[in-house]
Image (cartoon, rainbow, N blue to C red; front, side):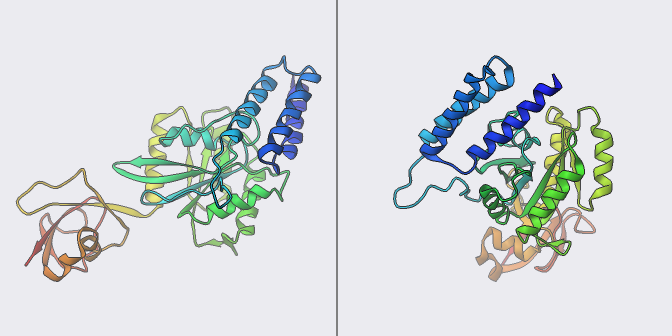
Length: 326
């Protein structure tokens, strides 16, 4: 059985080379040739090849439905920004990025045990305690094809994000994955002389599978960045991951309280950590600055609840603020 899986893996590598650099009618032609090869070699009686044929048919259908934008070329990696921050999933093929994406966002990304199930950039909304940020699922790298054209698009989109999340599969070779991904970050000028202007972290996937605990400990010894362990079928680990991603973005929530009214706890104002009362007011309405007298604050940034503060007071996460105007 092991030899059969090895041959299947090599077959995937071969068709990856065949399909990666073609699109449109050429992709359909190459996909049909692959399906015909599977049938002619009588491989279609085995489950993995059946699934591969199904995937190829689905991809052909996607190509036929792909929109044609008049006046310019359709860009499958053009992803409008949304939410209070943007984080990219950055990893090799089949490490569990799309499964993770489905688990923590509002999307339904195709997943499968074959190379590059994800072939375009896809985005989803991840919400943690009322705050929504964007997760971008990028195609997985093929480390046997370092000059793959789509790799350039992956790195281009990664540079538009606030944070880059290296997704490491705990059931695969840790050193191989880290070496390749760090090289890609260096090639993209994201990681220079051991430093990055982007926030970096590692998501360790498949933490519920045999051998993952030992691999996780090895990973911790290899990197200096935050490492977030996950298991797609563990709700607690996924919620903890959302919290970690929120903290990675260095953002806070504050709430307003009109005089003599209750705080508006269902309407958070999102700010970068280190923001002041002045920054908060500018989010509410900049004209309030000319009429500002003082603010009262309830929360961890003050010594006592209801303390009066000025414009330069630095607010903390979940502070409640009442602005008093002239």
